[in-house]
Length: 91
Image (cartoon, rainbow, N blue to C red; front, top):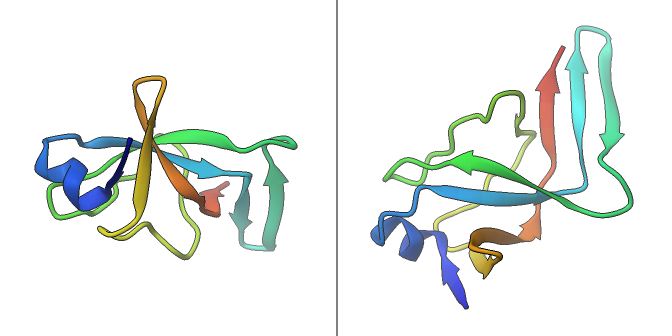
């Protein structure tokens, strides 16, 4: 089953899992890419009713966030993004 983020929010779903292969660790000296592994991980993010993502405990979107039209699939009772996103963390 596929749905857009807009459709998920209309149904009251406010936690989605973002596909990512790693994150940039940002510091005053630059950034370092830290891959999760050879496979993508799915990181949970909370979304408000306007489609704004809140940070999870340690990660946020590096540059591009999912839009209301991005597609998510239902897998293992979790709504997972089809598109992979770069995430970031501050030290």
